[in-house]
Length: 78
Image (cartoon, rainbow, N blue to C red; front, side, top):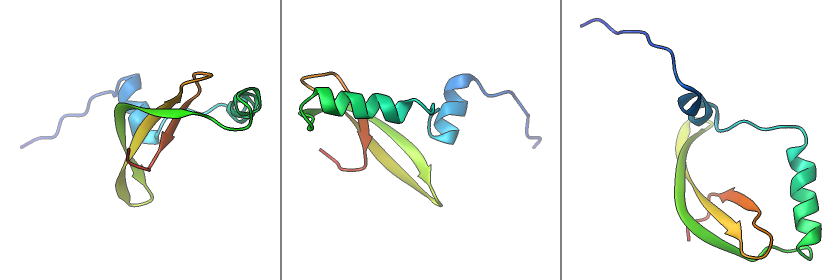
């Protein structure tokens, strides 16, 4: 059986590397945290991602702040 090589689309590449980060992302997170009163009131959205963390696949859960809309991914299950 021959393996076929194909080009990955952008969604597949993001899942492979765990998402794309930008140097400004940390400043945006800090601003969101300060404007939200130094805490976020998160709720889980039900979306998950399976990412490769070191050598194991780990499930991350998406949550969003009810007050400011900040989106966060965490390993903590709802």
